[in-house]
Image 1 (cartoon, rainbow, N blue to C red):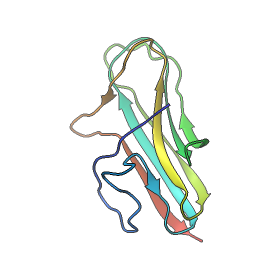
Image 2 (cartoon, rainbow, N blue to C red):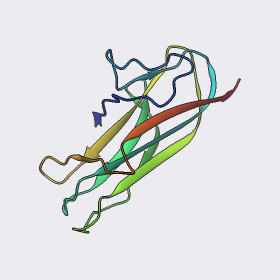
Image 3 (cartoon, one colour):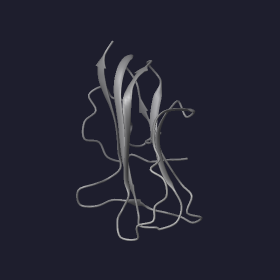
Image 4 (spheres, rainbow, N blue to C red):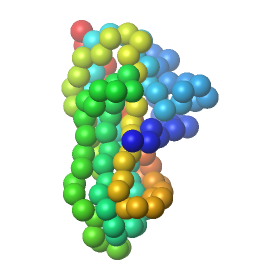
Length: 124
């Protein structure tokens, strides 16, 4: 799994993301129940499989999406995953990508899509 660098922010109301240090992390400051959600697209490559996952603390997969083989040479597969999960202060989450094409595959960034990861605090 390759963790994605997250070099932009739309909102960060609890100072959970640093654009420079460990920018693939969202570090939890307020413990509780969170809705975590991630999405990423892949460039067109017809071989192999694609997977995205959200991991906690670099080891535990808390959400994942793996649709199977990619055989379409014209579309950019965009995967999403998310779930409610309980996180403690200092836990961190990151969005990772895996692919099995046998070569390098870029992420897809288009006019209306870019990879992102979010953590929305729901409550205690």
